[in-house]
Amino acid sequence: MDTDFVVKVTPEGQIELPSEIQAQLHPGDKYKVSVTENSIVLKKIQQPLTWAELSRRIEELGPDPNEPTPQEISEMVKEVRRERRSQV
Image 1 (cartoon, rainbow, N blue to C red):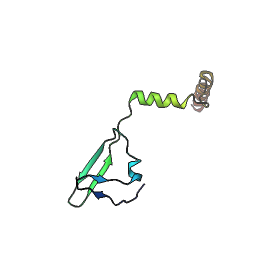
Image 2: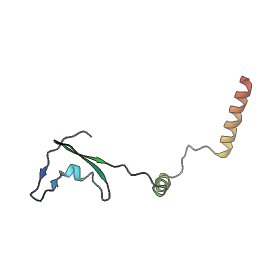
Image 3: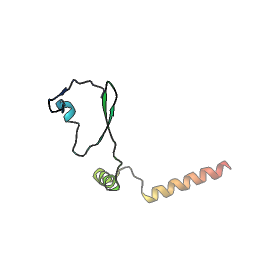
Image 4: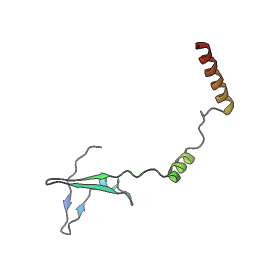
């Protein structure tokens, strides 16, 4: 999303953010702030995925209906081995 917004600084020195920006902010998010003479840029710091979060996401997805069974995997391995032997 590349959209420009006009924001205002309050007398207390705070920035009033439009609701479109506020909707993208979540408690605990961290941002890197880069300051130059004419600009202030906020870039979200991507937090590394924890093992617990990865496990939760996988569990949430449920089993893969296209996952081959151990028998099917065994057959695929045998087929590849036969093909490789026939190429020699």
